[in-house]
Amino acid sequence: MALLLSQAVRGQAQEHAAAELETGEQVPDVTFSTLLHYPSGTASLSDFRGRVVLLQFWATTCGSSLLALPKLEALQQAFGDSLQVITVTSQKREEVETFLANNPIGRRMKLPIVLDNQQLEELFPYNAVPHLVWISPEGRLLAQTGPYDATPATVRRLLRGQEGNFKDHKKDVMDHDYSKLLFHEGNGGSPFPRYRSILTPYVPGLGGGSGKVKTDSTLRLQIVNASVAQLLRASCGLPSYFPEKQIFLTSDKARAHQVHNLVEERQHKNYCYEMLLPAALSDKLYTFMQQDLERLFGLQASVRKRRIDCWELTLLDRAAVPRSAGGEPGHNFTDVSDPDKYMRNESANRLVVFLNKHIPDLPVLDRTGITYPIDLQLSEGDLQDINRLNTRLAAYGLRLQKKKRPLQVLIIQ
Image 1 (cartoon, helix red, strand yellow):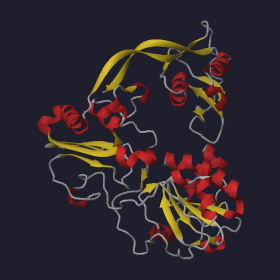
Image 2: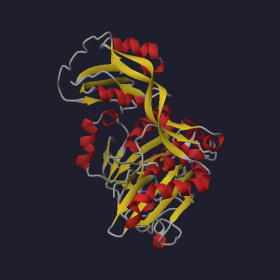
Image 3: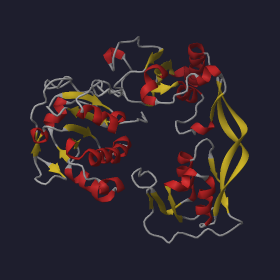
Image 4: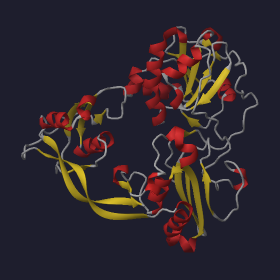
């Protein structure tokens, strides 16, 4: 089963540890016997008494974890000795050191890193990262959250002795297994009938993902914690990477389900869906799913060709775009901590993918016809204005032009 998860899952179902702490309880004085980026190489939680302590459980293979690290670095710099951010990973030392040496975020990372600490894993069980643990200056457990609450405002409230006003509370369901039927025999929560199509509200702790499982006798589709638009996209057989800029909500009823802030709206705008069918009806999967969603939400979705505005990346007056100077292919487009962006020895399509994520509203298409690798540098400021961006691209013989083109779109009404 191919699962596209929003968070890195640690493994199969686990039992809650007997030592698991509840909010408000005093945290034991855990000793960190292997501590990177710390002068003595070891420490104890009591060494940081008088500060707000923020533990972040993370993994080098989890994109969400890595994106959170520069944000936590900034918090540590802003609050100095009033705050202590400590990162925690269950990965081997060699893996972590390779990440620190080779990853752009890792090379900038200065936060302490705890390795191989079973006691922390037992006190604060989780199955998806990033997982944040907040501890008061007096050593009490304040909350366990996702990265959304890691803001200066939260830290200021805690330093004043106020409530943290946490919104992204996180208590993972430790016995959920994606390889088994959702909710069957308590897998992930309340039991449901074995043969079914079901829709439930958002379920905290399950993360997000989708997958198909086909056997000789059945076909099962499972989608966890998805928006209505994402469910309808799947019901049309479109992949999860189908561009959101090519999804149009054309009625007030459809726009009412649009998600503007995932953390604050997920409780009432995200859903879990599963359909189990006999294998003989496999070709009816999307038809039945569309019928379910129309009954449940009163919405219809269809894939059409429509002429829409878009940006085309083209050659500037047929200018020759310089070929790459060579070297190891690479880019830092995913490094949120570095405002200066570059790509070396990469295809023009790599640039188009990046622009699609950073230029709002309109899709970007590759119309260069370039078949060889190129080099290019941009800054975040270039992305704020098309004219400025075109000035930068012109140095490489490229430009963006607004055109109307027939593209595949998803209409939800």
